[in-house]
Image (cartoon, rainbow, N blue to C red; front, side, top):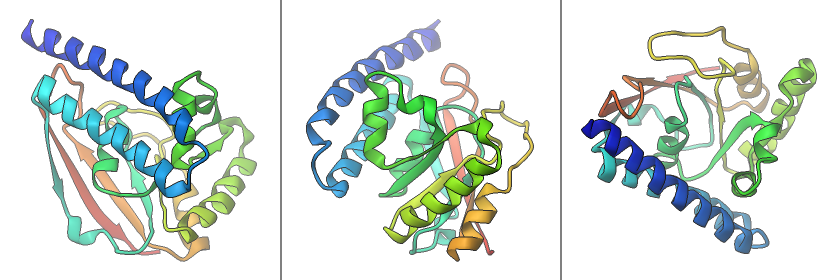
Amino acid sequence: MIRTIRSSLFYIGFTIWTLVWAFFSLTVTLLPLTARVWTSRLWARTGVSWLHWSCGLRYRVCGLANIPATPCVIVANHQSALETLLLWCIFPRLSYVLKKELLRIPVIGWGLHLSWPIGIDRDAGRQALVEVIEEGKVRLAAGFNVVIFPEGTRHPCGKVGPFSSTAAGLAIRAQVPRVRQLISQLIDIANSDFKTLHYNSVSC
């Protein structure tokens, strides 16, 4: 019962914060990219802080020494929406590869545009791969880390879906390192109170 209450408290508070942030984001759309990205990071870091306060969630980062100082391609497993928040607590500049449909969501989509994401049509096949590589090279050259979830969709903890070759293709074309991120013990807020993020470098 307590976990359910705390989870509900988080979702209510985070929803309110996201709506406030999304409307606030409209006022910074014409500002320089650095300012827009800062607002995205503020949203995520505030969300993680609220999650800690409301649900007691803690997280540990392992392998920070394996993260290069230069922009890289981050290859991450995808279990929930939480990792999209946690990554902002580690990397100052991120560009997510995501479904174009997310950018069309009223209010939320407005805010997503701030972080300079790469929106793709997952049904476009090879054309989507070409878009990720071309736009990803631009983001990397501008100093952004590009985040790719190679499974393409969420999978429950302990299960792994088939990987696409998009991340490897982008890293090779852009001549940047790949960093593999493993998020373990990430179930749902009501059933787990400790998350671990592991980083391992992968050379091209």
